[in-house]
Length: 78
Image: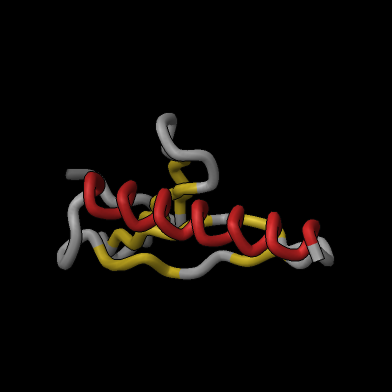
């Protein structure tokens, strides 16, 4: 396997906002990109590829997106 010289980001085609950061050291981590109600960017780490699979990262990302959508709806209704 050839290692990249800089950090590379690979966006998932199935879950909006989910991406993998591939570091020059060979380490890979899953993150979810989203914006808050006040347009602040957030990129919480979901886990390392050594600890969770892409399938699990997708499940976590979907759960977080659902939670964020519920919070947004709650704010709109209040």
